[in-house]
Image (cartoon, rainbow, N blue to C red):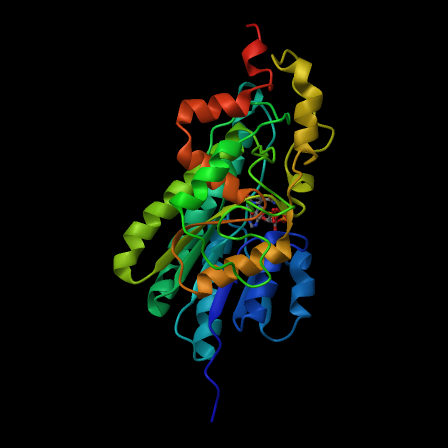
Amino acid sequence: MASAPRKTVLITGCSEGGLGFALAEAFADAGYHVFATAREPNKAASLAAGGAHIEVLQLDVTSDESIAACAANVRERTSKAGRQGLDVLVNNAGVGFIMPLLDTPINEGRKLYEVNVWGMLAVTQAFAPLLLDAKGVVLNISSIAGAVRMAWQGSRHPLSLAPLHMLIPLLAPPRAPGPRSQTPSLPYLFSSKFSLDTNWYPRTLGVYNASKAATTFLSETLRIELEPLGVRVVTAMVGEVATDFYTHSTATNAFALPPGSHYKSVEAIIGRQGAGELQKNNESADAVARNIVHDVIVGRKGQIWRGGVAGTAKYASWLLPTRLFEWVLHQGRGVYEIKP
Ligand SMILES: NC(=O)c1ccc[n+]([C@@H]2O[C@H](COP(=O)([O-])OP(=O)(O)OC[C@H]3O[C@@H](n4cnc5c(N)ncnc54)[C@H](OP(=O)(O)O)[C@@H]3O)[C@@H](O)[C@H]2O)c1
């Protein structure tokens, strides 16, 4: 008797070394047929060596032509293989940009939004017919950076959120972690790796954070709008992950503020943030990917918090009054010392 065709997943931004690459491997290991896409497919070529269940396709999420061609290609491939639509779409492609808002070239901000916000929505629209056929799942890779507003500076200072330590177990019952988990659904309250006494800082600045807030809002609104159509939407609020994100981020190399910047006195600190040096709680992309895939498979929907310090970000942004949270996060960051 012929075996049932594998479920299918398409993932954007699968260059080697990134979260998309790790998600492709994790979905393949979980029994899915994977369409791993990249704007430059040679960057994901090694995935194809993983066997017949991973195909590497071209997809630039900022190009209407590329999106339409990829959707047509996937429709043809799935129907030839006797599969019903597309079971999972993963909007993972994303770019970063490190710069205070006053110094951010608007054009760079627009380019970032093209990938992180409009790219995600355009890809979802293009694959919606296939997702509706399969009654599938949309998984949007957002970030804890989208959960809080942060000023320009990336400094790290002793910040204790210890009082939350006692409150959290009372407010949220623990959930079973996924396989090979480094990230329980609750923060690592008692683990040596991480606790709420650990310093926590969002890793990125203005425009990127804003784009991820937009991603989160779009994703959660899609969840409401697609549920009646039988499509489940998951928003991954991803914490710190060891990937090539910072080496890819615009302005990472030889970071420099423009002449006349009001923030010259802290340029070195912002530069260190741009190089990813202040991101101290990275989890491996493999572990984060496997937890996220587990979440999708077991049927979770809405926001899931995975990756280093994601638990702290979730509960601190939820429990603390907004102004207090902002004040705590900005202590020692020089924001209040700047003279106009
Ligand atoms: N790393 C973290 O700590 C972290 C934390 C929270 C959220 N995230 C999110 O996780 C996702 C993956 O990031 P990552 O950490 O794996 O960084 P990464 O290694 O830089 O991967 C980003 C991927 O997006 C691709 N991409 C960029 N522009 C694209 C476009 N126009 N069309 C298609 N693909 C494009 C990149 O392709 P190229 O290789 O061709 O540039 C790359 O494959 C992003 O959405 C990011 O915001 C990461």
